Length: 163
Image 1 (cartoon, rainbow, N blue to C red):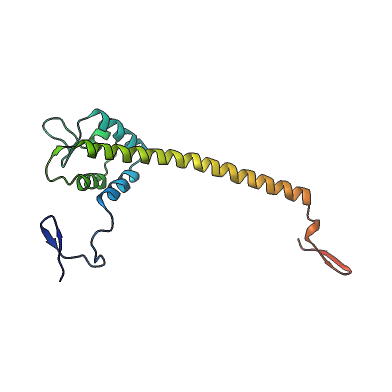
Image 2: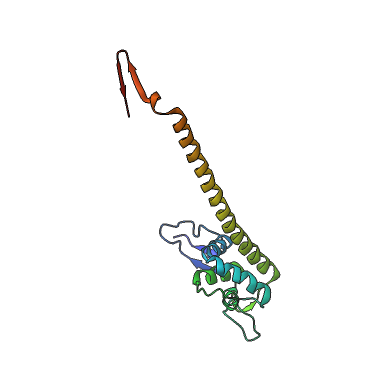
């Protein structure tokens, strides 16, 4: 049996997944962020800007907190374990430590993009609804102007409506 190496640990491939994981840690983090409620994402963005953020633990003795606890302290009352797992996997946390600037910038960028994409979706759905209303109004206007006379079959002497 083939064994795959992962950071000095060998493990057999899981059944149905011969090549191991299908998503990267960045994709897992983005998916976890997108699954958070909008209010929690906004609170987390405020929290990472106003608190000392750590990886690998919920909090530490020096006052550092994980992003989810920072969100909780800023009003985002959500418990979402898959975010914590994705965050720790993304940061490759083995023990509690302060988050690096790169990790914080990546988290902030993903949170900002997720918040913006949701607000853009709302604007887009409004535009789609407006377009559909205009199309319905145009079709109704055309139907009123044309009437139903064009629906009549003209078979020589017979003149009947198909409506």
